[in-house]
Length: 324
Ligand SMILES: Cc1cc2nc3c(=O)[nH]c(=O)nc-3n(C[C@H](O)[C@H](O)[C@H](O)COP(=O)(O)O)c2cc1C
Image 1: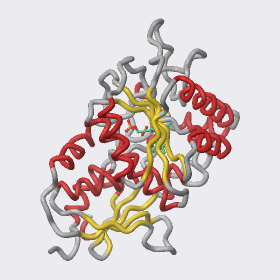
Image 2: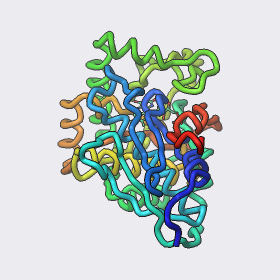
Image 3: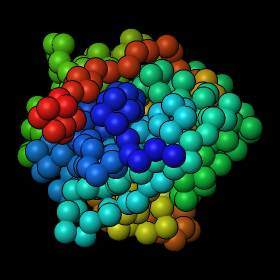
Image 4: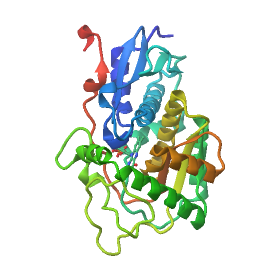
């Protein structure tokens, strides 16, 4: 049994962790080794004050990175036991991982791990083909395995009711100039290692669109290239809405996203109705759920695309000077 993780194990696992999604691709995470444990931190220097004043989005992203980290360590044969928010006096430390009993990864863990570099947000219209029942079941099971729930909106009226809530939230956010300026400042029209590349930002929103697009500087669509008329919309939620619940939800989000990728599905996220408290409550009530909605996803069969850039792993590691 190992005493602790090594710098090499940290660097290898963090290389996978940073493939996680984050609001505007800000990549708000750091990783360090302390007393043999790997710690995942929210990077307080990469907050989005106008878009994410509470830090919800940063904790979801850090949770998603934590899931990749866990998976990478497991597939390397060195799984971890995880404590969330281990130090009350250091709220930026979202998790501490210590080596558990070494074991071989299962085939399911290996498949999910293989999905990490293939996953990306696909904001383009999907094919109209429905998502089959067994894939839907796998997605729900992925959320449940990580102690969260996943509600799939069934039927036109449920999706229309959701769309109304989402457009309302989108309008509230768009009225805030600081929010618009912040979003625009993270759109990248030239190659960059963070932010949303305009080419990946999806097409420009049109009046006929059922769901509101966040608007990352995309082009107008050519005629006939509308979004799928009956999208599969899924709402991920957690038991509560504490900081720990949000880290738990981030892990569940990533398990759902990797499960979708592994099933040949594409996903885009839309979180405007999570970011506006009254819309979030409306959404929760409309689902008849306890707890807190934490993310909304559009899921379907998409055109091929490509992963977005990340900063180099060494930029997010805090290593003792002699080990850097
Ligand atoms: C908490 C959170 C909220 C997000 N909200 C949205 C959103 O409202 N609209 C959107 O298009 N993408 C959203 N995303 C996706 C990110 O923009 C995306 O993960 C990031 O740009 C990196 O790209 P990738 O997912 O292709 O790796 C969100 C991601 C996270 C983690």
